[in-house]
Length: 107
Image 1 (tube, rainbow, N blue to C red):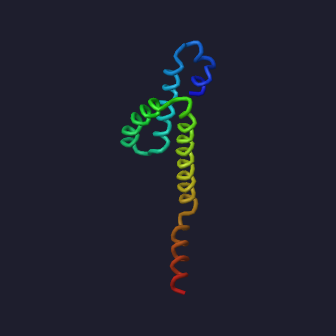
Image 2 (tube, rainbow, N blue to C red; image 1 turned 120 degrees about the horizontal axis):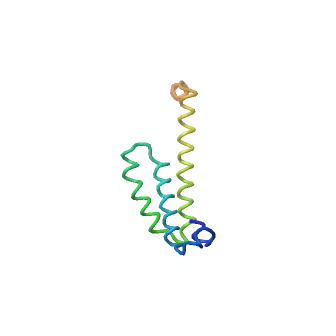
């Protein structure tokens, strides 16, 4: 997408910056869909929609918004992964917190 906007190689050699930029945006849409979903069914449904949607709205003005959307998806994925890792590392922490919360109400 950046090469299509700035007309740097290899886009300046092809003469089709709009098509290449839309293809890059479609790939970013696919990456966003794959990052935010876990099940194959959800991925099968969202991948074409986001790929087409990102490719259709791609312009030099919207490219930063598309990148921000992907960064939000990456942040969400990182938070989910951290929570999953913490649940695996400390399996009894949830019960301990519930006991602590429950004991504060009974005191």
